[in-house]
Amino acid sequence: MGLALALCLLAFAAQGTAARQSGRASASSALLGGVNIGGVGYSSVPAEAEHLIADAHALHAKVVRIEIPWAVFEPLHAEQIATGPLEYADRLLSAASTAGIRVIMDVDDTPCWASSAPGAAIAKCNPSSRSEANAWPPSKPASYAAFVAFLASRYGTKLAAIEIWNEPDEVNEAYFAGPEKPAHYAAVLRAAYSAIKAANPSVPVLAGALVGSNGVFLRLLYAAGIKGYYDGLAVHYYNLTLGSLRSIHEVQLANGDTTPLWLDEFGWSSCWPARRLEQEQACVTPKTQALNLANTYRALARTSWVAAAVSYKLQDSRFEDFGLFSASGAHKPAFAAFVGAMTAPFGRISPVTINLRRKGGRVIASGSGPVGDFMGIEAFQGTLLRYRALFTLNRFNQYSLTLPAALGTGPLRVRVFQYWSGVAKGAQKRI
Image (tube, rainbow, N blue to C red; front, side, top):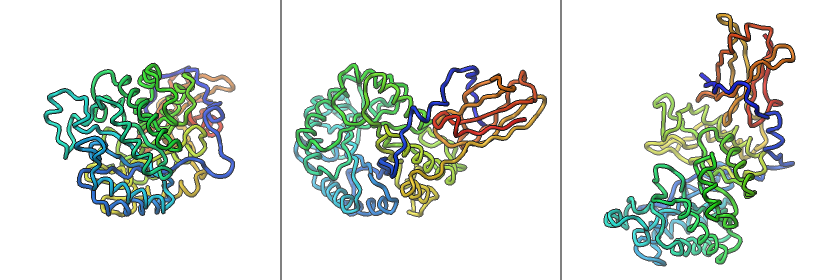
């Protein structure tokens, strides 16, 4: 069940977490809630764009995020835009604007002609299909900057933001390959920001999106001079989502960075019980997926330093079950949960629960809690704190912990709480 982290007597200040980490809006949530809707491919059909926006509108989404592969739009030469992808983008942005939805454009994938990949990779690069060379940054950041400036000029206020590349810190280098990644990414970001603001100053620019929450890559980006060249920091967190956001936010603050976070990828796959893992993430049931989405959106609606939360993704595909729609187009339980979170952002979040029982001379604490962060447990004898630890919930948001034998079987007062929401929102029992 739950995994205890053996952090007894850890000095954490969860009591102040809610006040320190979140800011409650007085009337309605300013959070941009939305959904990832895929990307423009080499064979995308422009007529499909309206259907995607119609589905997002049915979800009450405020934003959608779509991948705009530079290699698809300018496959052969700079400023030579392919007509099919451009028509797709035009139709999608027009439909989104009509529906009151703004678009985050995630722009990545270097065309063969602009890639800094080694010669062997360039020799295998095909302008009509993705290859290794597309993951390498451009040899001249100005060529990428010119393309994103074109997007900013063409789509303007229809855009929620332009995101400069995808997951440059991902260790598998599927999106941003090569040596000296922080320096190369910083060069691309600086060039892109300046070009976008020259083309349309109102278009927000997002740095990232980062997958690491420990701040190592972000600190290297600060050292490479990224400050002042972005309006928000995009992040992708699928594990301990709330805790990861807090961790990277603390790195920001320690480095004098107060730009908001855009969580523009997060989610859970409803692949249980058919599989245990999917895309390195633990499979859950459709019901758990729905509950997790609602709880996370509502937690973030109360958080002033998170500007957007964009779930991954709109619809299941052959190898992924992260969608709000099934692959056949049917509504999953996550559909209703998402709509509920969009229309009632300050609605109920699942409470922390606790049960205590004796077994073999020891006390076992079990229960459940909301997804997204470490949980804390404390055991008191009278007013004396005798035990403290952090632990994580299992994939179904449940826990079962056996307290140390030294505590005996009572009398004890045991309380459990989520670190994000603090002790005040926890639960306690006596035995």
